[in-house]
Image (tube, rainbow, N blue to C red):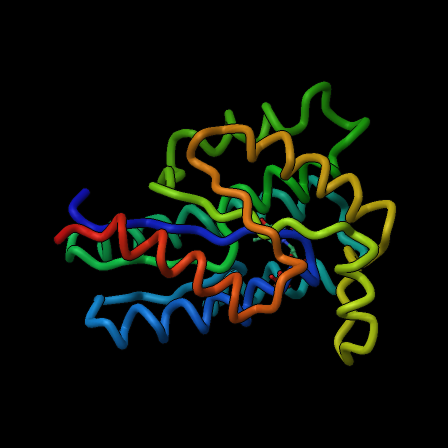
Length: 200
Ligand code: TMP
């Protein structure tokens, strides 16, 4: 694949969305051809996912909705990469491993391994994944006043998601970034790393 596929991951309140906007602005300003994307996607599949997570949908249905959204997203990502773009995604497959891995705990023997196995045929493996690391308590304090609440914003659940992320982040594809620092500092650190990875 000629392009570069980078994903940004972290628990709710880790500041991903702000940081992704700053990184893509910085890279575009330096002349890179950036596609900024997100999951859940802004398509009918992403809308179906959002519908489900705003309600009390069972974890298996929720999982397959996320996977359907990802499969379609993967086809678009492959096309952007074939055009040589830098694709920057605010969440991707690791979100499912971390979140649905926690949601399916007790329902499957090794939920994260199971989710990775069912995803294998269609998932696009990122060249690099930045994990925005922040203690769940601090993350929750940041989003306490948000008008729109997501069902997943609860301390014990986010702690389980965080534990899954930390396990996943042992893979060399990941770079863990201290997200307790100001967003500008986090974004600059990631933008610097990405600039080094861009083909010259
Ligand atoms: P967002 O807050 O980053 O827009 O994501 C919406 C919520 O969906 C957030 O609580 C994380 C959750 N989520 C999953 O549970 N699994 C996934 O695969 C993705 C992409 C998001």
